[in-house]
Length: 130
Image (cartoon, rainbow, N blue to C red; front, side, top):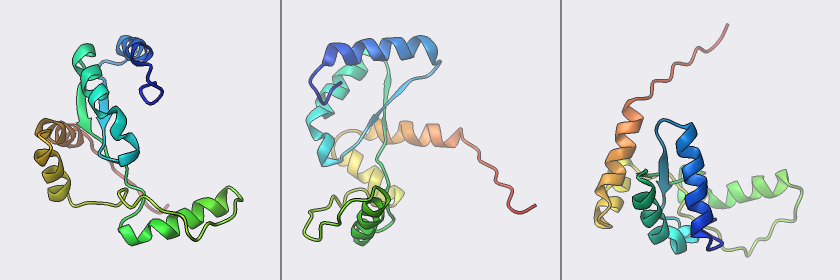
């Protein structure tokens, strides 16, 4: 909704989710494709009383893996690979320190801290083998 400029619809959706979920967080990212909505997201968070949280997608470990990831996706959807395509390389894994620093530098330290608080509440146990 925010990408299409419909702030009111986004507010209505957040209101509906707030009725269903006990805790509702809005994810904030530095991805350039979403930079047009970053200020609206902050405003939406304030109006809806929902916490913003650092939420950057990680699609590959190293920036150099952007091309291989794109090739695999392109093959997966049976499309032609564009060798001269400009790829987003900002979806690589940053260290926790680098990611936190990125938010601190933007004056958004609270978002990184909120992400850390959520992560500290999660416990995942995997049983491998039979």
